[in-house]
Image 1 (tube, rainbow, N blue to C red):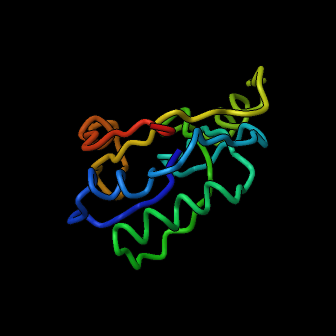
Image 2: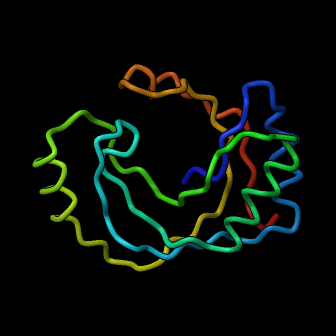
Image 3: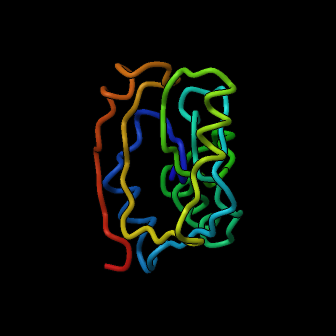
Length: 135
């Protein structure tokens, strides 16, 4: 789940360390499986807005001294692919999740191509920092 999008010059390890201090496991309530024409949100799980996730977003923004206009929209992308609207809708409606909540145990900073528009762009993504929540 994307919590925040920051500029390239941010020291990811330092930002994540500051952001997760005292932070416990993050939980998100599943709303539904959705689809869109956006490459990085072809098929995704939409989560309910959550105060703790919003606070984590704000903590990261503060630690990164970031003034971007990124708005938290908690979701988990399941598929990045160019597909017809009919195929996306059929796929989204065919998925029945066997759970109503998801627990996230770690946070990762990922350096990625922006905007991401292709498989090659996704394959170029690199994890640059990782921190367990609740440490």
